[in-house]
Image (tube, one colour):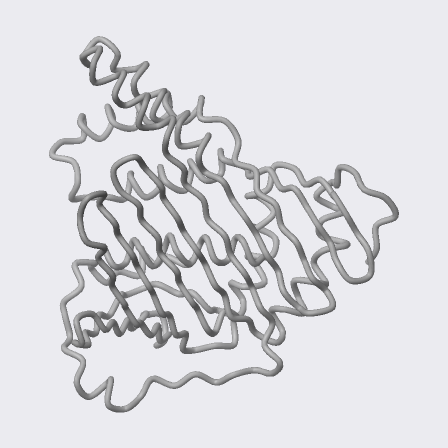
Length: 306
């Protein structure tokens, strides 16, 4: 579970953080690479810190997760993450959690130090590379695969504002790849095939994800905002439609009301560092961290680069 969380989180962080245009309008992928790549390269050269705010509001409970990440570039061997999580079930006391984490690249393995409930643990995840320099160069090209289209909303010497449509097909392919590689969640190959068939049918009708990105060139800050609400509603409505005959009318009505009153958003802020900050894991953390086993088998054939 920790491995999956790290993978998804780093994909998101890399995605949202990843020379002049004469007028606003639709950009081609060539334009994106030509005009915007130098801006991103400046961030990558200096290193960045990222703030992510994920918020889910529903009629029965609210969830908010704030994640601060320091060391987001291919030069950092160590990254530091701080989580502040709030969960409020209506009518009950708010629950708050604070989690601190260090990610340390050690060859092809990722060492993960996590503090929860004042206790440190260490997990070694084999064949997971998140800051490889050659991989970073490759990702500059691959990152464009996740973009369906880009519209330039505003441009001047101090600020660039974009509306980006995500290539959801590329995201679906990544999820499918993870499902195919999963050897524990499905009892039989037939069960996995059935799930993938339903997955394709449901996700093919989910629609696009659009987000806005503002690049403050003067203050060296990139702000992004994604509203997943409609996208999530589409997915759930597609599930209801597919399994319509197996659901009670009341359950469908209750779910429809729940969706109508729910909202899921994610905001991120990428801040360029004034200079490269070298992050170190405190010696006392390494001394007290209790190593927990990884369920992932070490295999060169299964090397996964994010």
